Amino acid sequence: MCQAAHRHSIFCILPPDVLGNIARRGTPEQREAAIDALSLDATLRAQRLTFNFLGGPLGTLDVSGAPPAIRRTISDAGGTQQLPGKQVRAEGAPASADVEVNEAYDGLGDTYNFYLQAYERNSIDNAGLPLDATVHFGKKYDNAFWNGQQMVFGDGDGTIFNRFTVSLDVIGHELTHGVTGSEVNLTYQGQPGALNESVSDVFGSLVKQYKLKQTAAQADWLIGAGLLAKGINGVALRSMKAPGTAFDDKVLGKDSQPADMSGFVHTSQDNGGVHTNSGIPNHAFYLAATAIGGNAWEKAGQIWYDTICDRTLSHSATFSRFAARTIAHATQRYGSNSAERKAVTDAWRQVGIRVSTGAVGAVG
Amino acid sequence: MRIEIATSGGFAAIPGLNSEASIDLAGTTARVSDKTSGYTRTLSADETKNVRGMIDPNHFFKLPTELRSLSSSAADQRQIDITVHLDDGRTHTVRASEGMSTELSRTSPGLGQLLEWSQKEFNSIREYKVKQR
Image (cartoon, rainbow over all chains, first blue to last red; front, side, top):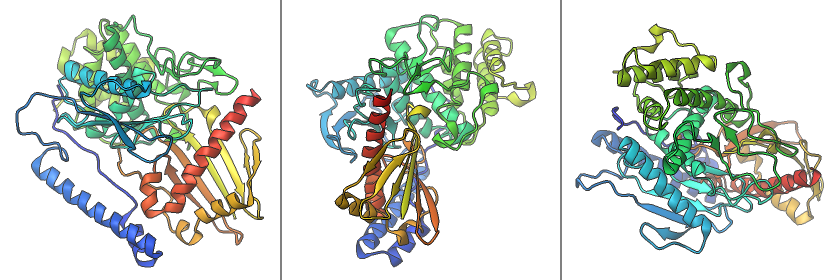
């Protein structure tokens, strides 16, 4: 279970001053929209104040003492980019004739059960937040994302990508962005952004390993296996075991993920290479989990989970700072002379992150 | 007016799938070209008029360089950099995320439409890249 008190996302839209300018100088339609948005912003700010006062998440306070219960809603965007789309399956409803609807529903269930059973976490916010997902977003849409409120899955174009609900780790990845957003909320840019991505890959992979009852030695450590369409030369989108080896194809090019700091990529694309440099902390987790052995979610996963719930970890954490906190949590859980602490320390060292003893600190 | 739209990132975030489309709106029929693949397409007069109408320079040039999604915890949305070059030499770039069209439909409806339009164009560019394989 997460030990730390919770932190939550800060909602934001266009800056109020820009909205104010639009409200003053825009066309009548623009002014109306800007005024609505400003009202919404004020409402959200008021809700945040209420939330902070009550010490719980928005709209999910549950004082009934009822046991944790999953609440899933799957919607269909019908090929548009409008969210959430038309509701097509609610919690407890029978299976649909639509495979993507069922994969999303089941994948959310598997991910929810994983967090509940492995870490006693009740949904994204640990307070039973309903899980919402939309399928059939856009036309031949080659992506899946978390928009801060719900998960969104495209159908894939069928030539490069299959449907994005096909891989359980992809669903676990997207839902974990919600978990991270509810806890440390790592800034989605540069090193903290790469850590945010890595945490989603780590727990996305663990959701799959938990479902398949695989040990660290048995797992494939691939992200998005089954997602690449027939004819594409690759096994997945990313490999935590061997970053940079997931694909090598005429259209896609070669997997560019580095496995250690010597290959760190500096770029303005993709929010500063968040999906590229995530290969480094991904590989560190793989090394730690396989060195510890057994089921990866039990010890290595617990250490990483403790770390994302750590209130002393800042939104702008670097690889080095994150590594220091994983070592601190390994120490707290398993002892300063434990094999677990050594495995975590060695893993970071192997990917080029050295953490001095003084930098580790204690867990508050 | 010329519009450049570059996309990167997304869950897959494969650099080979990034696109850099340029739309030259000088004449009555615009032309789209993609630097990463050699793809070109000439728009009809109606489509040219529609795309031109999606950008109101008076509004666009007042937008911040980075539009934030409704939530700071959003992730895996493709990064879309939109640069508008005006005939008088002024240039302005706005960074947005795909999937923001619903949000933008309230405050910047034209920009929201441009994001949706660019999504379709990027699909065509991707299909072109696949055929070139």
